[in-house]
Amino acid sequence: MKTAIILVAVTVVLAACQSMSPEPLRATAQLQPTTGSKTIGEATFEQVGNKVHVVVFVQGLKPDQEHGMHIHEGGDCGADGMNAKGHFNPYAKPHAAYTSAERHAGDLPSLKANKKGRAKVDVELDLISVAHGPGSIVGRSLIVHAGPDDHTTQPTGNSGGRIACGVIKAD
Image 1 (cartoon, rainbow, N blue to C red):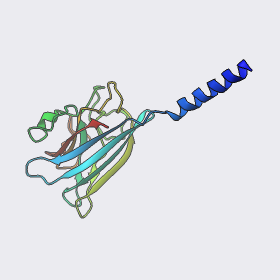
Image 2 (cartoon, helix red, strand yellow):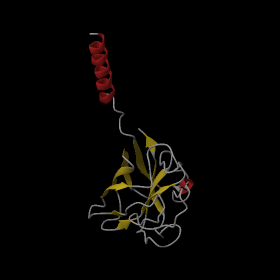
Image 3 (tube, rainbow, N blue to C red):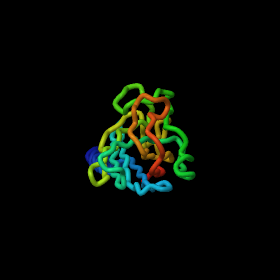
Image 4 (cartoon, rainbow, N blue to C red):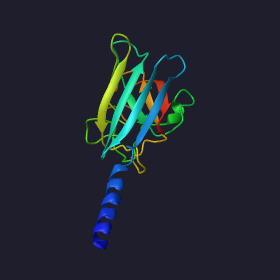
């Protein structure tokens, strides 16, 4: 009888623990325009295992143009985004396309604006994390650039001025 009660108690405790699974780690960024720009948007970052699901919606872009987008190391959008510093690169890699194995952690897919100047990116990325650690993007900035990223010019991709910036904050 005593063993049966203990077994039932253990089963109840284990079931309760399973139902209390933690919320996924999430972060967001609200993109605001820099001086002379009308570009705005929002981004969400959700930890999915060892990758981060990134969804970015942007509007106010130049229609039918490609725009570079990167995570920058600083968490400050002051001075028209220049306070965000350079690309987030905790592993000391060269700048490259987000699909390259050797790249900055902050290298993201380009935004491809439609005829209305709107763009969306929906991708899962490694090298970054919403959790604590060297790849953590929380407290850093998301920058949208005026031009396309050539994926080769070091260290920036020659993607032009900063037209929108948002600090990445944990939810």
